[in-house]
Image (tube, rainbow, N blue to C red; front, side, top):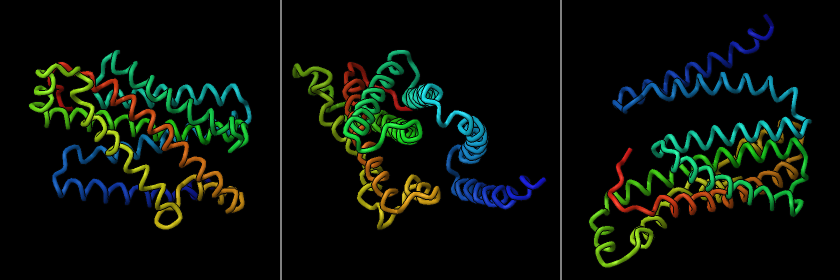
Length: 248
């Protein structure tokens, strides 16, 4: 009974915020205006489950590794679904994300920027995976859209003998830049406009502000490194087009 009493204000606040979100989008007649509500419900259920699970495995390296593998698998599947499901797209997206994530985490722990512990591995691994998923999605969707918009230009290059990747290279660079803008803006405004969740959570967890700041800047740098690699590889893979791509 005490648990539900403690949760009641939280549930009420979240319900009101979800209702406002759906109401605003519906009033403006945005397509699938109910989707944020489902996302909130799904996120709440998933957080409840993962909170229970993590409380029992937080210090076990093998379980942490398994949890990260599951997170990565789901993230790559979600990104692939946004780009248009196929085994080829799924494999290329997963490869791009894995390369970026592994490179970033290797240098984070290899340089001892953060101590290699199960808690740090879980925290930074989950954050980088989530951001890489978003960056891969943004890169792929923007690249398809911009190639579709400039298809006459792409065909012109192809007719002059350029390879498919050469004909889309400028568009691919633009897609990479656009995909990284949210991460770049978050990084350069951290402390002035944005207090990232990892920073606030670390302070709430009892870590000193200085230590929390050290953790956060490592996280932000790792996100940009992993995201840059992921985005460039996604653009490289998807830029090999011979027919006009279809927007999703």
